[in-house]
Image 1 (cartoon, each protein chain N blue to C red):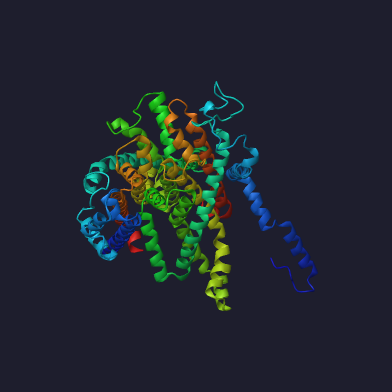
Image 2 (cartoon, each protein chain N blue to C red):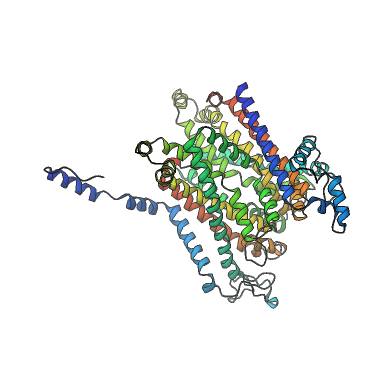
Length: 308
Length: 305
């Protein structure tokens, strides 16, 4: 709000100032709405805890994630009859501490989620912003590319490409990053179309701003909140796909403690000790649920009209 | 309607063509094919002979059109691993995947559409909240985890259903639940939102004002219009399920197309991988095309837009 009223109307300006002071700023209003959204609060707290544990894994973890102890294989977790406090969540088939591997596994999931979204977000946003702003033929070409990308079976192509580039952490990130940009492109395109019609973009064009400048400093900041929502959902998607790829043996390779890999390695013991897959599966569900809650919550708080 | 259909058909064809290029490139990135066909014990001269025999010394575009020509005649060459043509492998495995996909789709629709309608009719009540909460939770559970949990509970502990294989119809129950689960949130949200929109329209108010039974208004008047977008989504989801069934087939040891592709990737048997990618993509393109046309047929607003 502009409070530079002309001199002489002191009472009016004072009233305006007071109103401005009493009205909550955008930021506090946003914070207040966020705190009232229970899903967002639960999701963010869970996510923060997981991120903190992942970052502090070397300090918190009771054991070495790679240290094998064949004398203590498949010890059940603490809530079962033979559990010990030394291995709260038990040990795997090579006697490695499950809690420790779970903590280090969170690093892998989060790393893959974040880096994949960085790559796919850059690709999808660039494509979508160009298609939405320029329209016409550029737009047709983009929607054609998106249609083609959607026709490719993701899991299959990701598996095949991961096998081609050599299954590794880096390989999985690159493959998923190059595959999961479609939703970014679609959302960016439609948001850009809306923003491009506004008066302030017309004004920027009228004062002679260059097209790149309009795209970067007028349009990009205004589609950012929609992008963040897509980013969280795609991050969850990437984490789930990595777990599936690792489960199928073509993602992250042993001995890295990926959660998908832990489930895959535990599969042969699941009939007698279901917790071997139950523990990493529960961790995976918690992480993905937390990210999705944050994404849905942010959408509700920033753009309530898109709810549903 | 005709121009709409022909335009969509053109797009579908060109997308399928582009996908075929991707599938072709996939095979050629997998390494030197002549060495792969010749096997590890072949001499340099033998590899060169095979290279010539299979036409692998020709320009890449010529090879592509040659491959495409054969693919159009359902000839995808021979598997490197099995002493069999790729087509006969695919044909023998396709029924399992199609059956699994069809049951999964039916299951997810049977659960998701009524749930979506209920959530819309009782919007902003505890039923709506529970349905949406179920969706958020559902999206967070990976299909392979769900499959493993179902095996542990229903096959190992309760012994109601078989653990793996494709021997009888009972073998399809658990995998279909696991695969169908994935589509439930999307279908439910769409039918809920479609229903909410329709329920607030004028003709529904008229129908209610006439004193019609609420169940007649909802099922006969509202649902018919709200269901239209779900048709398109169901087709798309069926395509996703065929692609995603690879994980479920691996969990339940089902000898379907996905399992074939999984094994083929692990064995570097790329003619098979390429064929499966192309076939699944073409099925998806055909499904979305049919869904678009069906949608336009059901809803004239789409074809006029």
